[in-house]
Image (tube, rainbow, N blue to C red; front, side, top):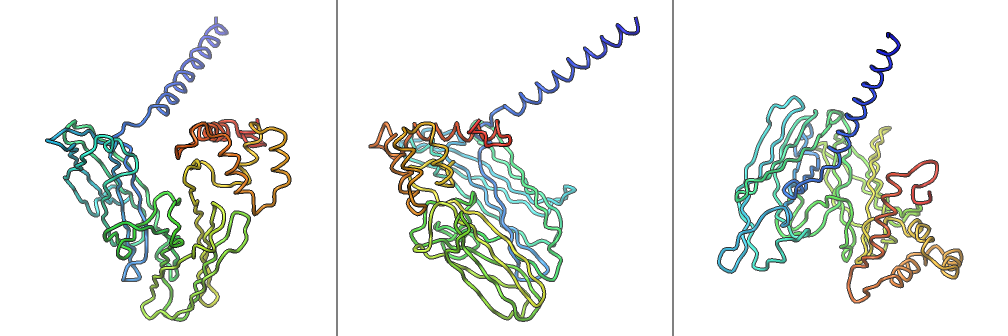
Amino acid sequence: MRKFNTILFLCLLFILNGNIAIAQQQRKQIPKKNIEKFSLSAFTRTANIGDSLEVLIYMRIPNFTLQYVKVDTNFVARYEAVIALQTKKGKQIGREVWQDSIIVNDYSVTNSVVRNKTLMISFAIPSGKYKVVASLMDLDTKNSGENTIKLDLSDYNKNHYLHVPILLDKAKGDWGFGKDLIPVVQNNTFNIDNGLTFYLSGKVLPNKFTLNTQFLNKAGKLLFEKTITDTSKTGIFKYIVNLPKEHIEGIGIKVKTELVQGTYSVEKTKDIVIRKVGISHLISNFDEALQQMRYILNSKERAEIKKVQSKKREELFKKLWKRRDPTPDTIVNELMNEYYKRVAYANTHFDSFIDGWQT
């Protein structure tokens, strides 16, 4: 009898654990509502007083996240947006509320993923741990969504500090980084006509220091280098550094910035993807993408890959990509985009001692 009870208990425990696992998996698979798909990002830089940080928070509301009502010849979406900064324990530092409308005259634009309304707020704060909470409500449907970011700025109270380089892009308005300059959220960009622009800031002791910035390609080759030697009287520094277009190579750039003062040194890096028009955003390395393409190539094309020089790999990839475009008159190659989506899925779900796409 005792043995039977033990077996029964173990069976019930197994079933219960299985149900919990299934429930957790189902919760993970619940897709986000459109109203929840606004983006929230935060960037830090040294404030005008060296002991303080400035946190700049950006909320981007794509057109498709809201419902539109036809008013005369226009389509109108009304919303309320809230951004709040809190301490780790939930104490509110500051809060801003916006109530506004997005008005368009073309219905197709209401579904745009690219067009958006951008809101910004900044706070000067001491070092510590914080939380950014943002919410969006559609004032017509009353649907709402919320996003949160955690910020760990505990180590800022040191004598020296170097912030991660911030990639800037052009956008009309004042976004905290000079006229018509705004931070790039996802660290990838199409716009390289004027090179790449980065914002560097930090704090030092009031003395001479050196700031060295290197731009490297995916293989680690040095593309460009900028060295600034200066003396700070206030203990803070802020610079704009540009990578000229003629030095941009490939689709992956690593930015490596090193601050040196006396015997002290610190380094921060950032990886940037240069997106190519018509090429899937999932591709960040042409060498790797060519290898991943081998299952859909013929023997002659596979031989081309083996023979091609490294500097001509991007050109070959684009040629093979174009050959497999069923709709060459359009910008998007849906067939190849779908192929690389499956490659990315395999890498995520079947990764082991070899990459998932190879299994």
